[in-house]
Length: 353
Ligand code: SAH
Image 1 (cartoon, rainbow, N blue to C red):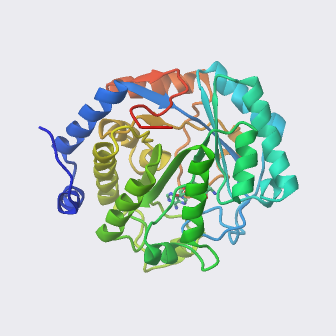
Image 2: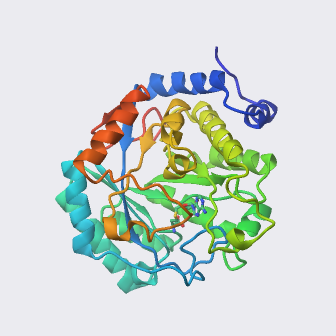
Image 3: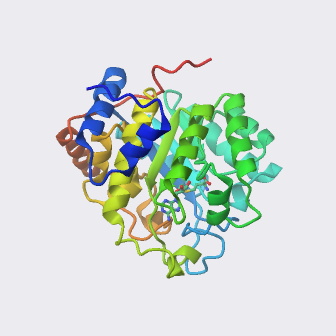
């Protein structure tokens, strides 16, 4: 049964129902299989730094959290993560971090990051280097592109001004985040946007605005996952913001429904079944795949720093950096009816330049 969702009324209905919607998930799966078959692309996530100059109200690595032990990885460690990942079949490395002054936008910071990108690019020419290190100047994005980065993940977080304001302090600007996404696209990056589902203050109207923004941006990847509380954040401390457990089921189902709607609206898109989805429910990532997702991003960061990249509480640690870890993940993916593709995993079926 084809589900036509050309109008916002239908989308609202699909998103607002309770529980899972098997017909919706089946339709999303049909579309993903028509374009991507049963392939699941792996992206090796390397969390290069938990230093951050920002103070997003939801995020555990915000500058204002003094309960966190800060770390940053050096070049050799990052390259070692790539080496391990390559041997396990990873063909994309995602360097993610807070907006760390050490790797930031001045000449010295840019140079440090460019050098790392260039070395990975040279050592693994058959792999994609993806960056996810926040808002920077257009010139900085260009330098990183010239060094060999080809993909950039920057969730827009909230396309509506009022929700964006609820989630971020006043020095952060939605207009700048959008500017970054358009600059990245113009430079030639494959771009990933996205948002947290069930973020404090988020309504159905906000989600519809997010979808409208995404339709304008036409990103290659869209990353969504449930919002999860971190105790050492303003939201984590606030009584007004609901406890994580309370709406767990709703957040899970809304995330799955939104994934399926995204697959129908963006048939070509790379949609990760995120760590946050795996954290909110032990079967979350498999359910995500069955609702239209086609990417999984296991963690390749060294074991001794993994608990420090704590953007929310109880973050899932899978240990996919080991052969056993990958075997377990492979089994999960196969049990869900898919298979791991050892492939750079570019977007398919999208009109690109
Ligand atoms: N500094 C980078 C990377 C941020 S971490 C950037 O700005 O892009 C990656 C993503 O984790 C964020 O974009 C956010 O959407 C998500 N995230 C942060 N805190 C979270 C929380 N408490 N629950 C769920 N997701 C969260």
